[in-house]
Length: 478
Image 1 (spheres, rainbow, N blue to C red):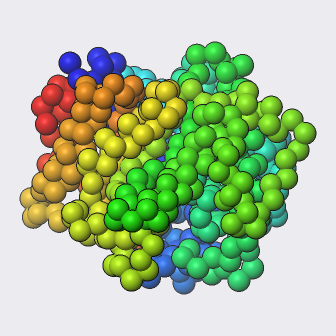
Image 2 (cartoon, rainbow, N blue to C red):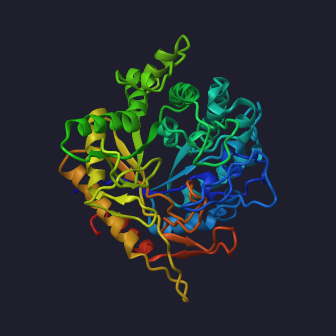
């Protein structure tokens, strides 16, 4: 046997990229609602005021808000055991600062969770998935302001109590280590400094960013303790965007640079959330960025007492690290790197490395010794719909098959404790980085283009039937 009998097979989406209904049911605007569409070469624009002559793709997204019953029925048909989704913070608290929640928003997620349970699917809920209410950016500059900890915890307390017994698996923040990079408003930190006009060229102040990330660490740790106190059955995890890097050469300087990249990219956040304290190398990172973290009394104890139950992560690609600045570069999730000559790449330049997933699983499990879960993985590609409505996507099947095979080896041969697997964008959704619909990940095609035109009808791709067999066989039929 490879995967355990209770392995959680499923898929993943995020409210801001999938849900739509942005101004319905009492919902307020989120940070994503202020971002226009873009392309692989043209960055998304960020506007403080919504403009009639610009298109904001997250407003309608894939329209799960009106299609959730149909979408969950398709997940049931595939055999999902779990569905990773997020709650839109601004659907519950439109500005993030209210004392009383929006009942219509709470009722919507009640309906979604009831539909999932009727289909035999366990929800895995990301509490904050790049989904801050925009009001918190306008008036507090996001997580730079420590008051967001209390606003976030009020939100957590509301949903932990409301959905007690309906949701047992939670993630506090999506890809929390995105805060290590100068992504500002769309990293989850919600920072929008004057002078910022697009996603790829944000005004960055490292002191702000690292302090804001510290506030998220404290908020996450407090949320873990709160969630356990409200329902001891809750399992609450962290979520980190993992990109394993390799040293490009045997040059010892390349090896040191690669070690530093792992510490910076992958372990800084993981160590705080799993081990409950900043790692020793954090002092070097702070010094390199001229940062001094302001720790309030009790913060260290909070971090120590609020460690997560499991470690979840996204995995799409790997990169290479070199001290040679003349080497060819490549794109990637969160950041790029030196091009690896041994790997192929996706249409968006992301290097495809299934073996890197096994390598990552080993690195993480042997470092942390708590259960792991791959909550994002997949291939963004151009899909063509044939005249009869069919979509043939053998490239996606090949990608996912190869990664599942490496997960099996990590479990069978290496002894990794792996809880589940939820490929990203199981139903087509808006790309976070480019705002496109054309960059498709799903097993299910949504008839919508980059400007929101289309019927929004759902169509099964060839990968739908393939993944259904994989789940039914618990990963034996690949």
